[in-house]
Image (cartoon, rainbow over all chains, first blue to last red):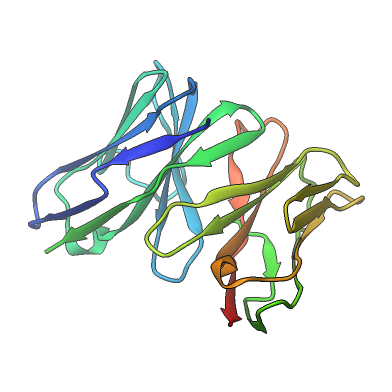
Length: 114
Length: 112
């Protein structure tokens, strides 16, 4: 149990395009999902907290118009990187919370912006 | 963002040896979680700790929630090559909407 999937696992795009990443909880419902960003050899940095049916809460320094989050159902949250640039290249990881005490992570999405 | 103090940063050990790593914080946490991450993958939950003083095992892994609620350790006994990876601690405060604060990770290398 407690499986979280992400799609796509890897994406390469041209500068200026938008990329959508999906995060799904496969065997549980998640009122809250989280989006993280991880640079090479570094820890996970929280970008935003996604709540089903309401607006996401963004961490300081994360542009909400750049990183659009939609949590349309209890099993799906999407992160759209708008007008991507090379500096947006990173490993994006989501997590889902079946209860308030535990988070399960997706396998991550490697974004490369050319 | 805020991070926990995790040590050591890296470890190079021989297969069969025991491993110990820990995380400390200047503030109290209500939950401590330990994750393992392999290259190109998301973190996998190893052990979750919810109560001060709690000692929990998962196979060869043992973790404890410090009595002061400001620290936690993870031990791996009789290490094997597949233990290789980066281990992260994460703390959660009550009322934080589940937000986790991560340590910087401990990179474990095991020599057969």
